[in-house]
Each structure stands twice: as structure tokens, then as C-alpha cells.
Image 1 (cartoon, helix red, strand yellow):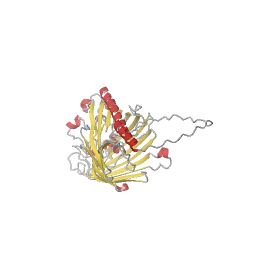
Image 2: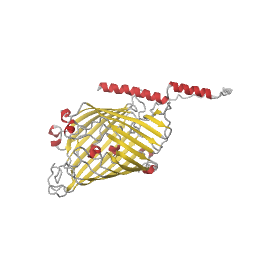
Image 3: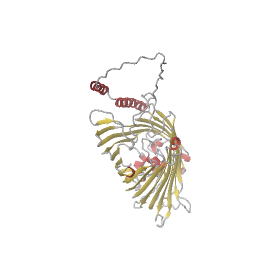
Image 4: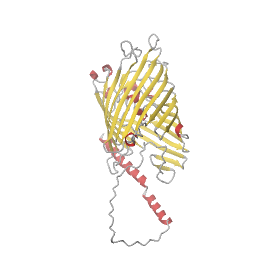
Length: 497
């Protein structure tokens, strides 16, 4: 672990130095620019200085103190489509480096090259290395991609995962395959700002935590509700836009299926899906200081689910890091209905997030006598808070006022999240069982507490340290003896370019 940290610090220094040199321009460019300015500018005659008034007291100038800040945008910082883009660093040829290494041709073409790397070191309960296939170190994400703009109004993005390790050895042995390595592959047309059209593969507009980018997360892992109840990415078409100076935003679309989170080799997942999401800032006029960044959101999604597969097609529940199954899918058929409500609030260095998700699956003709069964129900919620103890204003990603090797130590943030996820059935009239065709599904779920420290070294590098306490409701499906709670520890090294 020490070797990894030393490597990160070394890379941090190189990138910070390179970024500063790129922003300032090379010495040759500065010298040439100064020389050209001197040669081109005509010499002006010097004006005679006025004699100083001896009776007038000389003004004492106060020394100016400047606080070094990181004015360069981070590679994973969202681009504001309404803001005027600052001119990139001038270098010979069509290649520049502002947020990313980029190719540009006048104002008609922009292609940015991106990379995201995340390496995890973790440990959990005794025996988790064999029972859950938990390696001490793994390359969790290794993504490369491009994004850009054509003719100012056509945005595109292509991103591929090279070595993602989302599954344990136990999952692979059981025949479960990893998710598609193609992540975001889409085109967005914004000739009409209030009705932009996006087509391709991207995230279904559902869930605050799920829609937060992987490099912007306050924790190493998303909440259980985001991982197993929210749809995630799928192929489809969406219309989205903003009104009232971003006081109201919407997104609605149709998709071929209901996302990567609902599918695996053993779970077919749902088919055609309609989803819609609305977010707003209803209280910002009351106080710009307190409520300008208070945003409320809600979303719904409806999916057609079949029983064509001989295996159960419901949703599942697993522990956060070790991914031990505690809620197995049940047989479902009919309509899958999702609803969620969320709150996202940032004030100065602090942030607060909360989200509630409810999913219901119909179970038509799924009893042993081909009758209907009570709906399967899945619910989750979390509440999360963060505080930047170094005093920066909270943003995602966090921008340090003083980067490491740039006059400071970076930004340090503490975070805490408590969450709950539950699986059962609606209005079961008989005793509960864990059988996938049981009339009354045996209630089960998990509680989890995550404590975290995030160190944003500079705009390229972030380190995250998380301690996770989990407790599974069903002692028979708890990975530790006697149904006790257990702790997991994880550190993540993140590099974005």
C-alpha cells in the first residue's frame, strides 16, 4: 500500500507541474510572444513627470496577498453548456490540453480524449478472500473514451471499460457474466436547449445516486438501492431540457430494456421501459445563500417483465463490497413500477443527500397453480452528509483551493452515510417463505453505515478511505456466523485525465 501511495504522490507532482506549465505556456512561447509584441508595438514618447507636492502626504500601499487557487478545470468537471468556453492554451497544431488532451479544428470540431483509473485495496470479514473472492488489490475501473462536439450543437460520447472487476470469483463460478464493457455510447443534439434529443446507450433518468458519475461519488461504492434497484444504462432515446435558469429540469425517454443493474447471465431483466425524471429548486428565491443549491427530484419508470426465462426474473440484493447474496430473485411477470424521490443540498463546505426508492413487480400466473401472487416489493433509502474540513465550497468533483505541490495539501473531506434496503411482498396473507414462488415472500434486507475520508490531491488525483459496517437481516444468509454485523475496509486510488 505504501508503494501505491508513493506512486500516487509522484504522479500528482508531475501532473500538477505539467498543468501549471501548460496553463502558463512554455518559456519559448512566452519569449517569442514578448519579442513579437516588442517588435510590433511603436515606441511612445515618455511624458514628463509632474513634480511631487511636498505638502501632500504619500499614500501607503497595502501589500496584496493572493490566495493560490486551482483555476484549471478538472478532467471530470462537468462542462456548462450555457457558459462561454475560455480559450484553450495555444500550442502549434490542432492539439490542445485544457481539461483533457484534445483535438480541435476551428469551432467546428472538438474531440477530447479521456481516461479514468480506479484501484482498490480492501479487506472484510475473516474468510472473505475465499468465500467472496476478495483480492487485497484490484483494478476496479480502467476506462478510456472520447467525447466532443460537432458544429456546436451535436455532442457525442464513447466510453469503454477495459478491466472492470465488478464480480467475485464466486459469481463467475456460478455463471454470472460481467456487465457490458461499453458504457456511454451516445449522441446529443441541442439545437433546442429546452428540448435536447439524446440517442444511444446512456443512463436511464432515474435515481440521484445512480446518475452521479463514478469519479464524483462521495463514497467508494454507491448505495445498495442505486446498485440493485435503479436501472442504470440502456439503449434508448430521450428528450431533456431546462427552464427558469435551471430552476426546473426534466428528462423523459424510452429504452429497450430496464438497465444493466436488472440483468445478469441468470436474470433476463425487463423489456421495454419508459422513464421520466424532474428536478427543481423551489426555495432558491427565499435565500440565495441557503437554498440556491437545494434541489428536489423525483423519477418514475415502467417496465414490461416476462417469464420467458425458466429462471426467476426479479431483482436481487447483495452486500456492498463482498457482494454476498442475501435476497435472491423471485418469479415475476407483468409490470415493474419504479418510483424515487431525492434531495440534494449543498451549503458552503457541507452537503446533504437523501433518497427513497420503491419498486413493485407484478407476479401474474406465478403460483404453483398458475394463479396470481401478491406483488414483489423492493425498497431502499439512505441519508448522507459530507463536510470539507479544509474549507472549500462543496462541488462535484471537489476543487482544492491549494493543490498538493501547488502551495497546499489539497482538499480533505469527511463523509457519513446510513442506508437501508428491504425485500418482501405486498399484502401476503400466509406465512412467509423464501421460496421464489411463495405467496408471502420472507422479508429480508440489510442495514449499512459507511464512514469516509476523501483526499482530493489535485484536479487529477483523489484518494478515498471507507469503513463499512453491514448487518444482514436474515441470519441464514449472513456471510458471518451467528448473523452478526461485520466491517469492511477499502481505499481507492483514482486518477482521471
